[in-house]
Image (tube, rainbow, N blue to C red):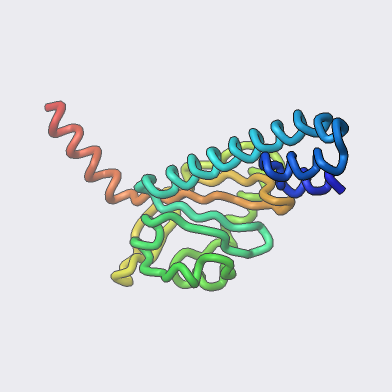
Length: 174
């Protein structure tokens, strides 16, 4: 029972002391396992914070979805560019993006990415902005396993914005 408690993540010092009262010195044998699980949980929380930060600051449009058609998350740039509400994306279906950013054509490439274990980029594509105007984007994607499901992260780079930035850099270097 104490092992199951540790497996559930209930490894705080109070739980350890309570177990020691019932198990005596045998509870001490679980201490290294509990410490390791606490460290793993802390590492995972830091990695999640890292990924969340990358989503937040990325100026490109980023979308995460499963290959069975479930939308998982998008970054603020995606929401801003498309005008889509968060409720339509988080745990929504890819059909919700059908008129804005159709994903079905990208799924064949995502399956290839998963099979090859490689990112695929340089895909000329389009997105409809919140002003109902089409924008040319360049898509890159990488498929991977997420919680036992096949998933893909898709990044779309606004080509016009990139060109403006390139012109600014060129003007600055001139």
